[in-house]
Image 1 (cartoon, helix red, strand yellow):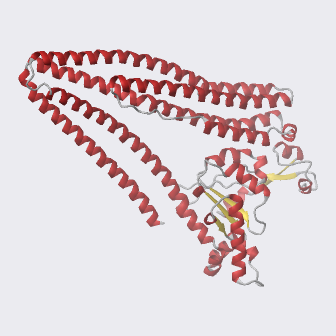
Image 2 (cartoon, rainbow, N blue to C red; image 1 turned 30 degrees about the vertical axis):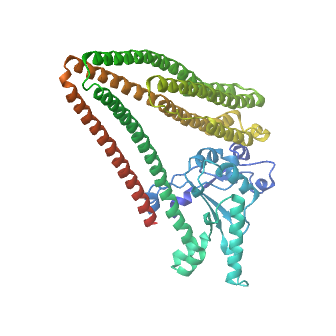
Image 3 (tube, one colour; image 1 turned 60 degrees about the vertical axis):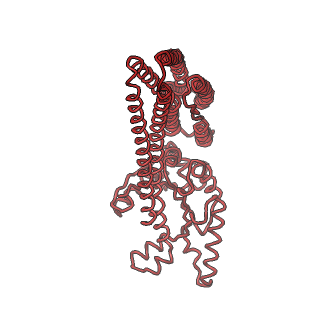
Length: 506
């Protein structure tokens, strides 16, 4: 392991120009000037990224650790903050107890780590190097009070619970483990951090799967239940009609048959309106995907790349990148308007079918592209801070800047749009599917009603047989509904058991 890790720390000598090209040397920085070798060269890391695998119980459970370098890397390696951090389920923010939280650390935390899309339990901070606070001239109580004060201050600055701040001495903990010094390991508080990682990270991953599974099951059972309720309602209507025919003459039965025929004809007209609605819905959907679709985005990415490569001045490059964000923001805003139009149209149609044909009125779910607009705004802010600066425009060659822009920002924008497209597709299905199911079911019920009354009209002695048949059908549907509720309870118990088991294990 030591040999493997040593490779990661290898360096190579390069010219100042080459180091500048990689963004690893600032000619205006006095600190960078001090790192120059006697021959004018400079040492830079051999590696940008390294994947290291070794057996460990936590890693075997699916934990993947992305170990990013210090704050200096954020300016020179924007991939770290723009690609890695947004995809992490949890972030362990390492701070130094002897210096406390610096301004640059607070800026990084607030801009890249903290935010509404992060769960509180997925964020932890480590106050490392607490051994710097150990002092033989102070009592244990005084040292504890100093550490507790640092924890309180850090929790306030990062807006975290104190329980998510872990004061630790990693070096003393490792030393204690190597030497078998249990007292030193305990004093280092490393075990508390290890326990938190075991108890928080793996269970939180399970919770994500748990919640997704639960939501999908609820949707499936909810839709199935709606269809069964519609069926039982149709059977009850038929039973009431047929029970009302007991002892009636053929004229009444014929009148009833004509009434059902009329209902069927009216529904057929409504069905034509529904087909027309489907056509308009398809047109509106196509319009939405013209704005939000991946084809339009890929074309914009291609055009922006071409404009940046052919640019002769930094202003032209800056204009191309500015236009990239402006157009995509505009597309998301226009998509929101289109989504609102589709929802209003479906609201009207649901209301109409509910009043005219007695279908169950369902409220189409709301949807907005606001969350994607926020993600895009965050990426644009990163662009302004890390790309759209005079220094970056001067020190980076055109191809380097273009490559970095598309490897980091543009790739993240594509990811945001992919998620948006998937969510929009799911929303469109959720909007139209309930109506389609109800329309099909209602059509089937009308056909059955008409067939029932026709059979009775042709041979009235089958009335009681038909009533008995429908009563058995009603009993069967209600049995299915009961089975569905039992299935829901079994699923709920199974998921709850998994959760309880995880808590008990912890």
